Amino acid sequence: MKAVNIDDFTQPILSGIVVSVGGLTESVSKSSSASLFEWIKGLRAAKATSKIFRMGEVFLGLFHQYKRNGRVLLPLLTTLDKLLSHGLLDELLCAQNDIFLSSLMSCLVSEAKCCSDVKRLLAIVGVSLNLLQPHLETVSIMQQKVLPFIMSMLLNPYPRVRRYTAEQLYVKLAEDGDTMFDAHQCLEEANQLLLSVVWHVECDPRGRLSDSRNRVADLLGIPLTSEQRSVKIGKRDSLQSTPKDEFESYSSLVNNA
Image 1 (cartoon, helix red, strand yellow):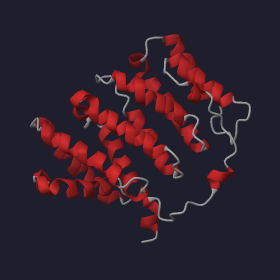
Image 2 (image 1 turned 180 degrees about the horizontal axis):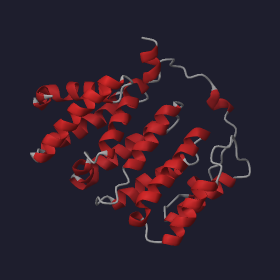
Image 3 (image 1 turned 180 degrees about the vertical axis):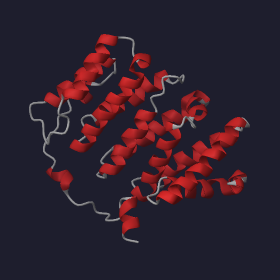
Image 4 (image 1 turned 90 degrees about the vertical axis):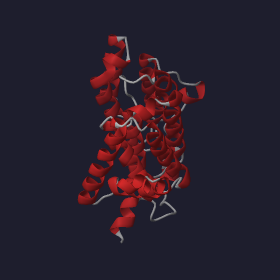
């Protein structure tokens, strides 16, 4: 990882490491993760903020360069999830008036739109939930962008995505809810809805899922527009068509290699 500190090599080496960390080969993933974690810890200890910012630029650049390309974005999302889980991006999330956090959320929202790769959608949900860090001074971005996006994923067209979002949000609220929200009684009711509602029904013509999602948002004080509140779950026939790109996911590329 020493060469990554050379400016001309930073982008290509980090890009390769990202694909390795988020890849499917366990031994390569573990080795790459250890190297990346050690490098980032060294940057934090040395207070090398310029290199930390450069790392953030590389991550965001991959979203833009490989938009809709699951072979790169799924490993990238997996890598970000690991780094966030270990608290290795805390300085980056809070730096420069939350520019990285705001930009990352914009990338996640853009990537989730019209995405038909369920694995990638689940990874996007995981990263979004890991951006809810109550110990960081990122409350405004959490309220304005992260939480409304998570609410939108509770009404994603894919049942598996809705169920996963509800389950993971329930876990997050059980762990950090008291720190994130003041109203304990409202938090309990929101958790009960997340736990009891059958979020993975195929369709919801009567809008019961929408009503439940809106109630969760109201209980947690999450702002939703009138358009967002009126979303309904309909039939998914058009979403069940075969993706045009048979190599859309990283896993299919590896399996067919």
